Length: 340
Image 1 (cartoon, rainbow, N blue to C red):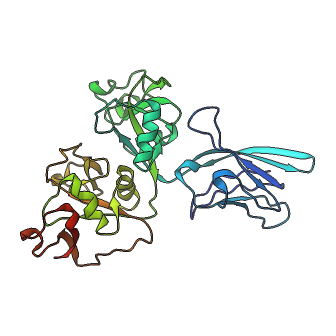
Image 2: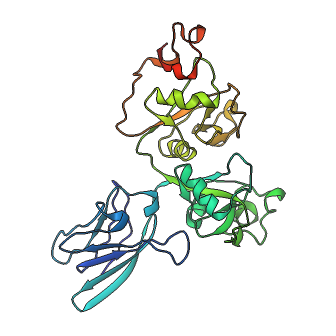
Image 3: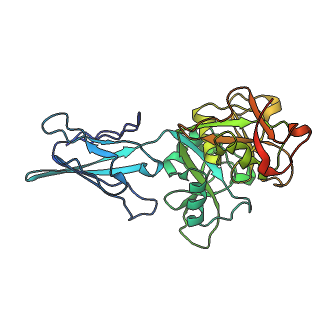
């Protein structure tokens, strides 16, 4: 039996194997907990959250390759493959990697406010999952530099430093990992915490978007309360932080204008750095959590696949009631697409 490396193209995990039964179990966020999918040969049945998404390829006699469709963030991890063929058993391991982006996150309450369970929920609310140590290491090698410790999927607490400095663990030191050395920094590692009373930030991971993130520029900046109505007028919802990071990294969204996001923060994505847009490095710039009542920004919206756009090209948005921003109704309930 051969278990090949997972392939995530059009959403398929496959393992070439000899036999009639394939069992896969990705390692969960907590050690000792696993999700299991049983796929039975001729019947091609799958169970649990894999029902309707997993099947045996069955290209010929002895082919027990597993195809997993509509891959989700929760499918990420290592899978144990066990094949039974009459009296012969064999097993192997395959890893499902997802193309995506790691991003640091803390809520409006400030830094170092999240227990491990709260960090899991915070990432899920922003369209992500807690990142693995391998994903954070890859992000560090790709240039991620963040001077605040955060939870990872295995219960450890780490942070990546590409530009060593004293406030961020010194110039190398014993807390570094990843072969960075003094010159290149590394991953500062607090080890496994798993303490319900300890609080840190979170490092989240999100993958490619099935829909589209876009920026709505108002005729006049809006408070946070108007952001949801603005996006709804375009058949969309206010984008989550993970969705903006995915659009920046994987769809190359580049916009030098801050906008509201669903958690009440204001951010903007920069692919091509320029001086007036926050510095020399690409990334998602953050303005923190401004006063939600102040009219400061536009809004980044997310439209799911297949959702219609009620305001086609050439339309903006504003207040209804005869005159748009110049006059008419100022009640937020009167929000509507408006030709500009």
